[in-house]
Image (tube, rainbow, N blue to C red; front, side, top):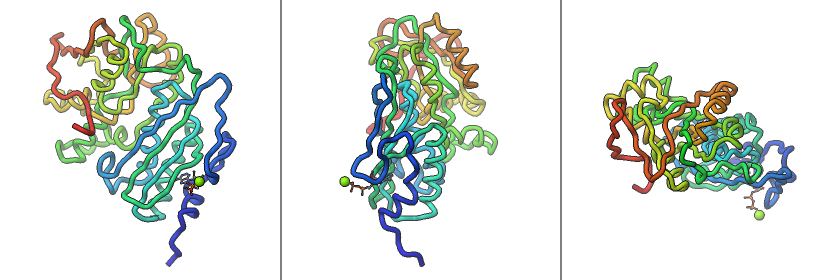
Length: 321
Ligand code: ADP
Ligand code: MG
């Protein structure tokens, strides 16, 4: 039997890597960070709680990826370049096999985006993961929720609803074929933060948000903050075959409009910049789809294929409802 690991051994072994882009990283009472000249710090935290945000037996490598990915998604939505992260983690026990895989998933994505883990906190308790992500952006180029203008087009990246459909399958609420589940599951377990898109939208998009609670809820935040309205066309929503197959039943529409966990970007840009957005799509090899417009007024109207407004029951995932 190996001797149980101390908290400090655990931090050293699993959460300490070289941090060349940092004045002082893990090991002191605080990290010391220097933002590049002309930039401001963009900071955001996201917590993942076992049983609420993931299944307790979730694959630890994918969980490590997702814990960082949901935070990186917030940097993308601000048009920020992610640079540093801290990780506060509560663990029921020091399960080394679990820690090995979790940290491998976390650092694989961190490395891909040049993010350095510079500190955190480690404690015993029910599994809980909280990352604070820090990035930089020239203050005037940050993509805020409040900048949408009448005459903007509304765009979304990637596809909507896959994660929610995969979750519905995992919870036994619907049954997907093996092939359908394979098409949707990566969106749920391994979301790809749209960092390159956020950076490309600096100086182009008037507003942006990442879709974590469903398109309607998150576009709702943009139009509320911007004091405008929106109209979108259901048929324009970019959805996978499994989601569109479920459009007949309300489930597909629910997943696309109100499913959580997409981690795509929703942004608005002047209609005159339509071609510039498409050029970015081509360059990044990432689908960007115009789904509607910003209009005067308030609220979001969704039109069906026949051009009739559809009745929207639920409008996003809210942990306290
Ligand atoms: P303190 O007692 O000053 O709060 P800790 O003993 O909690 O410091 O942590 C020691 C060092 O390890 C600190 O630099 C802290 O930021 C870092 N650290 C603790 N837990 C983690 C973790 N899960 N990931 C990365 N760094 C961590
Ligand atoms: Mg201290």
